[in-house]
Image (cartoon, rainbow, N blue to C red; front, side, top):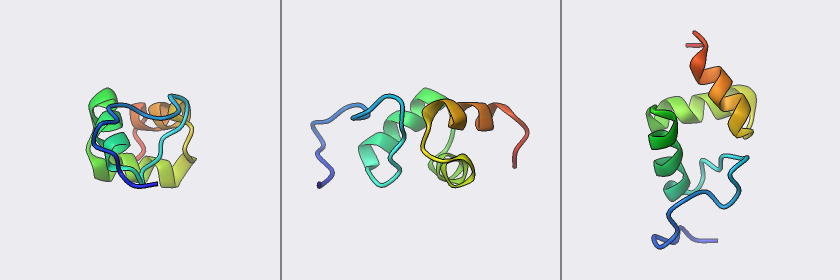
Length: 61
């Protein structure tokens, strides 16, 4: 599936797909983080939005 610029939010609000730029933009705004930090969090804890939130709240660097 290509990156559709008309899509403004995540397809599934419980998971984060860092391979779709529109989702990266949405999640970085929602979680007040950078794309790099978002991808780091997904690598560390998986694609669960709640687990990524918890990771970003902690001191995991």
